[in-house]
Image (spheres, rainbow, N blue to C red):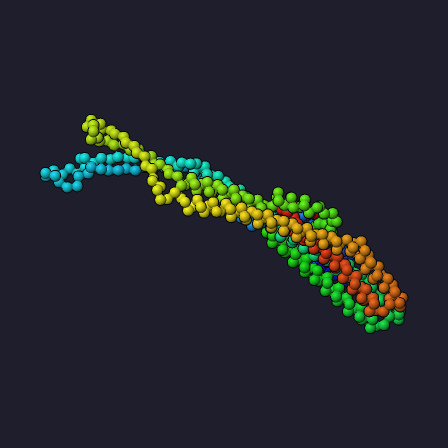
Length: 448
């Protein structure tokens, strides 16, 4: 906007120079025509700039935000852990050598004549569905990772919606500041004509000129705040687009209709991902306890081996096979400590789920009554105060121009109008922020 304004001012001065030059060359006149054409194309180029809606911003955010992508990888890691959890134990292969002569006996030493080579295989058999329980535990962990991803997205979307509201609010403030500055410039033109006609004292015009500083300050502050708000939303989008080329559009207003509080509560209980995580943690604790009980059972190890040597019982049997089973005697360790710990952990997670549910009700109730308060404040502003402030300002202005009110009265009426207008815009921003808070409290969009 500053660039366009400066360019138009330059073009205007250039054209005036050409008009005032009696001996303007054709080349200079062609430059003037080109400048007029360029000035006409600038607003068109600005208006052709793409403005993102809220839905488009959300889609872009989900596709580009690095934190969202990192959280998605947590789910992939958990799914990979499911493969490991369901793997069977690997069999063991061993080779044993026996019967090698160490010392001479009666002058004979044939160390390897009686060496017996015996390869063997062994396998640990897991009982009581340990493998299946590990798989179920990993799957439940993946479900928790998915719900945690949704909960993290809920918080990030709240930050995104807050940033989006800040941009809309900054745009409304900038437009309001522009309108105030335009209005005051028009007022100064009228007062300067009154000064030339001798109807107004120079000191009053000077005071009015000084009042313009406040309007300029409001405009520049709003302009900087708009750029800052855009920078914040661009950071969340991980977008390197220049601020001047980035624009959003949306409805900067409020809705008087709100659903009953109980409906918001029920929706939150059904959709809040953090509450879902708390419930899934209870299920995970129960599976972990079952796995702990299963780990307290004994797992036999089966072994089989082969030898190429006659056995002691049968001198003609040169190829023999043997087998064994090994069962650990869990006399002192039956995993008692882990059983007790995991059973306590079930109760702990159950209490945490109750705490999460209480937090959901707290969040919904707080956001709801904040919305109600903002709506109650906005209704009279929209129905009465805005119109009343503008009417008072216009009447005091008319009376001032006709000698009925003092300059101080007029400046006070103008300040009151600005205060009412800014209060209204601030209240809309508070309402939209409260709406974003309600959406986060419920777990999905319920207030536009």
